[in-house]
Length: 238
Image 1 (cartoon, rainbow, N blue to C red):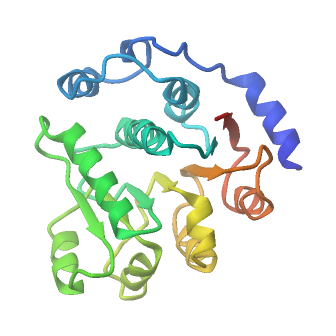
Image 2: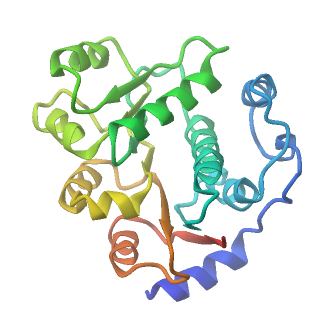
């Protein structure tokens, strides 16, 4: 199905939230509403309002954000929204890796891990493991052995762990491709495809990318067709 057709069908089925509305209007557990309040987040930004209803519903979602001088603010908004979607589906009583978040660089992975840990801080029993080059494999393996709910990392190091059978992807229910345009620019397309092929088919996939163009880039459209189920497309203008 052409991407435009997917876009039209999906857009009719899910309405965005109202920008500026409180997070309590969303189907979030009280723990996450308390965590948002503790961190000073009291209302949804326009980007979050457009993303969260679809993401929290369990739908696959592609979010295209037009890059501009406010890119850092938009990155913060999108990271928080994606983190809420991941945590919303998490079963903290189950010590399996349930979410996989792919980032283009260790710095980006560190930002995501800090966001997730900040939200989960008051709960005290959700573990986030970061798997990137630059840290010893042995240390990362020990972290996985002791149990992790969420893995955040770069494709190359994630692939190392999959090849070494130290990262079990059988319980994954959410996969996030963050800054997917940069992932493809850095040549990670084959790594992304391999990791995605090892995750359960019945999962939620969330893809976030930035672009200077209004249309979805062809490589990302192909990624959506191959690894996502009727994704809901959201275009956030500059």
